[in-house]
Each structure stands twice: as C-alpha cells, then as structure tokens.
Length: 118
Length: 107
Figure 1: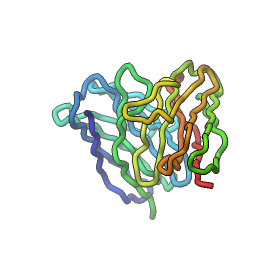
Figure 2 (figure 1 turned 45 degrees about the vertical axis):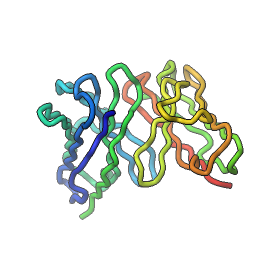
Figure 3 (figure 1 turned 90 degrees about the vertical axis):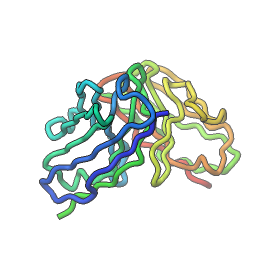
Figure 4 (figure 1 turned 135 degrees about the horizontal axis):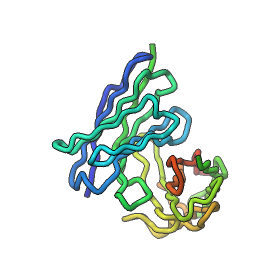
C-alpha cells in the first residue's frame, strides 16, 4: 500500500523559492502520476501540477510560470519548487498520487504548512 | 477550465439524518468526478471515484451518483465522525479542478 511522506521549509520571505519533497513508500514509483495540491487559508483545494516517473510534467496554467517539478527515481521521491513566492502562496501543500489510469487522488501526504511573510 | 460549484456551502444536520451534497460542473466531465472528505489537520480522504464507486474501506452509508454536469454525494445516516468539509474534483478536462467545498456541520 502506497504511503507518502512529505517535508520542506515552512517559513519563507517574499521572492524566495518554495521547495518541498515527497517520498513514496510501499509501492512502485512508475505507473503513477505524482501531484502537488495546496489549500490556502479559508479557501478550497488547488491542483498545482503532476509528474510521472519519467519526468513528464503537467502544470496548472495559473502557476505554470513559477512551478518546477522533478523526480529522483533512485530515491522514489518527487519535488516541487515555486519561485518568487508572495503571501498568496501561503497554504498547506499536499503531495498526492494518481494511478496512471485513474482520475482521482489516493493516497495523499500529510500536508506541509508553508507561510510566506516578510 | 471546468468550474465545479458545490451546494450548499454549509449544511447543518443532526446525527442520523440524511445528507445530500451537490456538485455541478460548468461543462461535462463524463463520470470523471471524485469526492473527498477533509477534516482539520488531516489529509483529504477519497470517498468516491468515477462518480459512483466507493473507495476502499469507505462505509456503505456514503454513495455517489450523477454524470455529465450534475453529481451528488449522499450520506444515508450521519455519524458523528462524518461532520467535515467535502470536496468534489474533476479530471474530465484540463486542468484538474476542485469545488469550493461544502461544510457539513452538526445542528
């Protein structure tokens, strides 16, 4: 059964780069899309993008210019970078998995709160 | 982008009552719709996938229906642990989007 464990810096200043990593345990790294999703305070869920084991990525157009995702297949890990953060990027960030032929997210990581403040 | 509109925004019910939550898509997403339960401090939990299929270990009191643009999640008899925020999510069109959520609160 796949489990996701995520980590990363929780406090950033405006203009810095957000960096998070998610490790995949208990299942294959290939055959899935690995996503990042966030929830800003008082708001709903926003899909940021996804990447597969080959490094093929799809990004939400709303964030595409600032987002980079990558994979490390030797460690079964995938990562998110968001450049030039502002206070609007303050959110809880989740990693999540989608089986290649599926249309839903399961499971999810535990979430990482990220605050952007000067 | 497909906009998912959930209604009502807040639903106040008592344990034992029936809850019906709605999710309407701005264009057809076929049956590529999922429902999640989200409690504070926890990761969202998949309840329903492809509109009407219960996820593993989800109690039978949860059911989903609909296709195209109109979907619903029904909880047949509310248990105390069911009070949470519920989100719908579509992958029928790009990019993947979520509804704004329905808060199910104890009356």
